[in-house]
Length: 287
Ligand SMILES: [Zn+2]
Image (cartoon, rainbow, N blue to C red):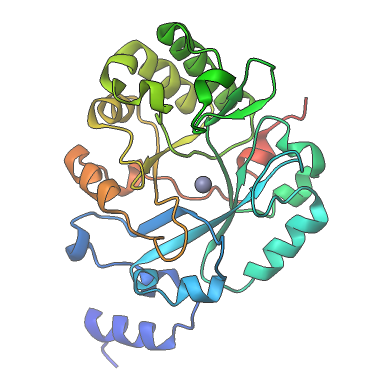
């Protein structure tokens, strides 16, 4: 039988059972982008994988699920802390048409896991939103009383420390994606353009290129802003899209799509999980 492209696609789709990436790809004509949509920052908090996969956006966007991972000192609804808990999480997602990731917490998160167990993940995402407080302990920068917990008396000095914190995490932690890229705590957020100078942006972006860490374009925070992203793109860094979504708000990527179009991002600019042997946790040397 002489198969035309159309009949080939129709038969391939019909033969495709649930975990089939091609069938889930949103047609390029829908977004104007030449790559399929993937939301690598989806939280299952207060929901289940089956409920999330029943959402209409799950037909056009492939999800990467991230559970929090780290020591029990971290305060989240679920924190995976050891190989057994990680295995339970991976088993729960086995056979589902999603990528399986974690959102790493703080800089001691690997301590409970073997490298072998971490290598079963598709990727590791983290962010810089927890920072050393005045007492040296992990402090959430989004807390209302953050200025009483973290020294921000001189905001420029804080910003330099915050950029160094980005570089430290990117260069020392075995991560594939930096989530919530360029987010600033409330006391600085209104002056985003002034605090994110080109020199500071370059420090973060150069570290990301050097250590093969992708930068997330966050649709929940609508960050980074375009001037940041233009400098990032010029260096050849990879990007990922993320909603940081809790049910039912995952897969909503309007800001990520709009900025990708504005920047002219192509398939080759986008993060995809590394093949076995090349994941960040496998390239990393335990200190
Ligand atoms: Zn998150």
